[in-house]
Amino acid sequence: MERLLAVWVEEIATESPEGGTVRMNIALNEALTLLCPFTEIIRLGLFVLPVRGPSRFFGGEEAVLHAVLQCVFDITSRRARVGIAEGLFCAELAAKAELVIAPGESEAFRRTQPLEALGRKDLAATGHRLGIHSVGAFADIAPARIAERFNRHAFVLHRVARGELSELPGQRDTSLTRRITRLNDSGESVREQLGFFGQRGAGEIRAEEAAKRVRHRLGPESIQVANVAAGRTPQDRTAMVPWGSPAAIRDSGAPWPGQVGHPSPVTALRHPITVQLRDEFDQPIRVGERGLLSAAPAYIMFTPPQRRSITWHAGPWPLVERWWQQSRRRAQMQILLDGGEAMLLANENQAWWLTGIYD
Image (cartoon, rainbow, N blue to C red):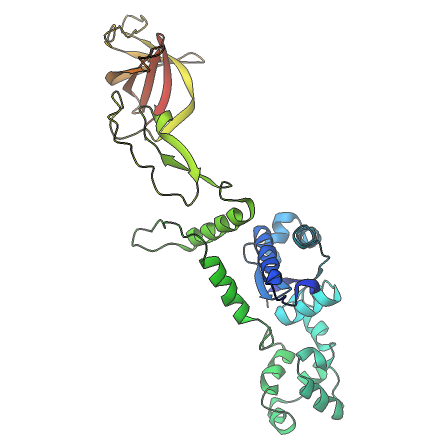
């Protein structure tokens, strides 16, 4: 059986008329999921998560317990009870007793529990009359004798007592899971990115769910994604928008003279890099008032000094903006290096800048 960490918060285990308890459970479940994406809410006040993965990440089970306790206190201002054992049945009992059961010791722990731990008062009453007071004693009864001495519910409970089943029937509140799913689905839907055959992978689904939880906790502006805006240069056309916004910003319809045609650079540098263009005689390349190059570019020089040969170029395309105010004159040009790298350059005040890189 999988080794589980159970979290029991008794103060939020009873539903309030105004629904605040459910919201508190949802918030705590989302916070615990940030610690371990496989956290499950079993019923109000009870959560479980596999301990093996988080213990590797945090550096041991003690560190995981500390992180979980702090997380519960930060969200609910309550002190939680936590425990670790194998299987959901034993994990819940360990949490309520605040015990960490050593690996391989869960069976012995289960057998020492009182018969009432199986959750049926009628079973416990019948067992006590027969001198059966513990889960272990109940497990030792032969399966063929269960029908003779107990009711029909005892068959499943007997398998739990023997360790054949890891949880009690009804231990999970399935109606609560459906309610939480409906509440999560009622939020703003986002456009899905489909796979090659129209489906989404498990990793994409987990990433989307994690993003929804972060946005729910930190606000709609907390997750930013790249989008395409209207403009002339790659820097003007790069925009960061909240995740879940429309897929693209609508173009205003302006002609944007001087805009470089498709395809756009894969990488638009937020901080352009200073470069130098030289002709075949190692003279600097300039852009004249009419937007023409002083000579054909032959080399590009980076800092620290590194010279690369240029095998092809296109442009320049002049950009004259705000002519009604202080005029700003720029030009853009594409180049292809001898190694196959394609780049977008910009010229302003007779200085050259690397502004974009093509794939």
